[in-house]
Length: 175
Image (cartoon, rainbow, N blue to C red):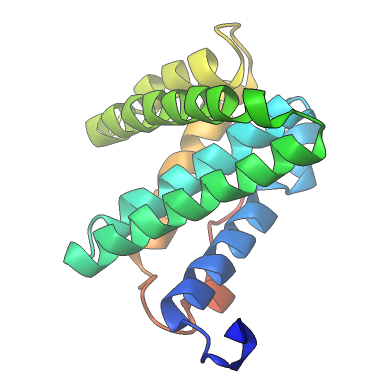
């Protein structure tokens, strides 16, 4: 009761702002129009997941505080996915299973993209993009997404995502 009188949690505000900027980046029209990602709930999930993965990978390089922020971003992402599923009419009994399945998909994407990115090879990332973004169907966009992933990682390396103003300055680069 009277929770509105409590001071706002700056960590929560920062996580929310970082997530909002991440979703804005994931919703860039060129990913769908030029990149061929379907503009469907599944396609939007894939693009948001890709960008959240980029952010969490960067945060994981920023020590314990960064790893904690990455976990908070992951948690916020899945709270948002839960809310989105509810808005789409998924009942309470089905939400847990759907969110759990989405989390498993996310972890698979995280491992796949991370392993490929750690290799530093565009072809490895392109293969991961083919499997994940395009359900195994080769697409000319896969190499473009792989190049974007590496470039975005490079852009994020130049940024501190833990600074108070970092969400406002978040930049992933060009597609």
